[in-house]
Length: 283
Image (cartoon, rainbow, N blue to C red; front, side):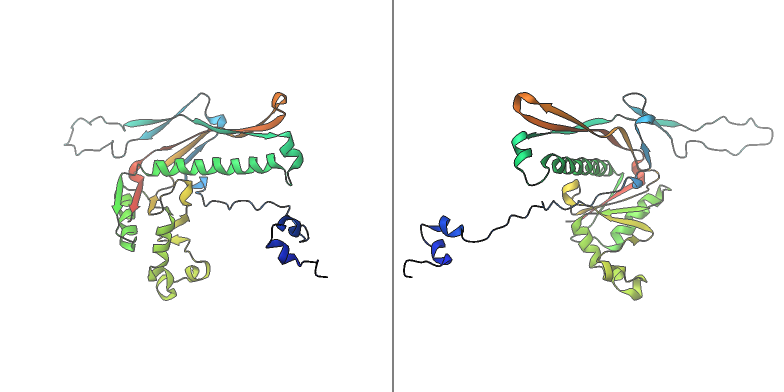
C-alpha cells in the first residue's frame, strides 16, 4: 500500500501530469460570448436614408435657414418688399467599413463550436459599435457645451436643454456615459419618489425619462466618453445614410486550405443642425 499515492500527492510531485489524468475534467462545449454593448438606436436620428434613397455615391440634404424670411411694416400704398427663405445643403457620402474573417479547415474540424459563425456574429457587433461611434463624433460638433464640475448636476442638464430651446428646437434625447449615469443615480431628486413621482430609479437602477427626454446609457468602448453626455432634438440633429447595409460574402482559399467571410458596410452619419445639439462635460 505504501507504493500507492493519493491524487493530491501526484499533483505536488514531478508526476503531476500523471496525477492530473486521474481527475475527471470536462471542457464546457458552449462558448460564453462577450456582453452586448449599450448603443443608441437609429430611432434617435432625424433622418435615415437606405440604399434605394442614395442613387449615387452621396446624398445632398437640403435645409431651410432658420429666420431667413422676414415680413416688414409698410406704409399705405407702399411697394411690398420681396423676400424668400434661404437654403443650404449638407452632402452625406457613405464610407466603407469592413473586416475579412479567415478560418482554416483544421479550425473548423477541431473546434467545439462553429468558429466562422461565432466570429461573424462578433464582427456584426463591431460594425454596430462603429456606427454608434460615428453618431457620437457628430454629437461632438454640438454648437453649445455645458462645462460641469466633478459631477453632472440638474442645473447642467437643464442648461443644455435651454441652449436647444433658445434655438427653437425641442430636447428629446439624452445620452450619457457611465460616470454621468452614476452622477444621475446620486441626484436625490431622481431617486426619491416624493420628488420624482416615480420609483423607477430604485427598481431598475436607472431612470428612463428625465424632463421628458428619453435617456440612454452608452458604452464607453462604443465611442462614448464616460464623463460626457449629450442632449439633442431627434427630429433635427443628425442623419444616417447607409448605402450598403451590413453585407456578408463567403469565400474559399483552397491554396491555404481556408474558408472565410467578408463583412462590409457603407455608412455615414452627418450633423444637420448643430444648435439642435448640446454637450455636457464633467471631470
